[in-house]
Length: 126
Image (cartoon, rainbow, N blue to C red; front, side):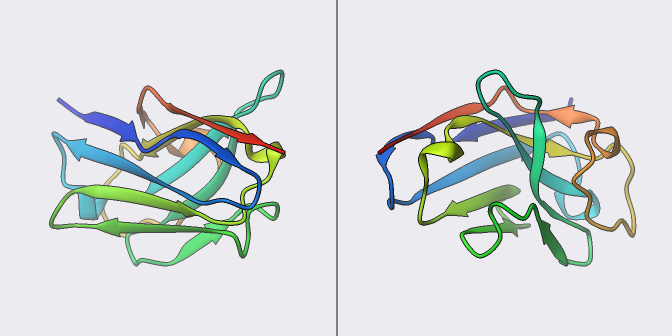
């Protein structure tokens, strides 16, 4: 059974850092497209970072240069390092994995992901 469990969220002041983790089980981690999404209060869920099976990454413009997505295949864990956090980064953060396996490019589209974690809350105060 595919399972994704996020951790590492919390409250931080603007300018601070957090590292989110997503522990994956029940599937071959390295053969899936992986991504991080977030839903801010009153807004739609949006893709912010993704890594394809080649290791190539993509970022949404508002987090580019501040957030870094990475994966540890041995630990089956996806990470999101978040630096220079801003109040507008406040949201519930979700990791996601594709159903398809193989040679897959990165994507920020929800439709390209089938498995989702429960989310971890990030709150950034000014």
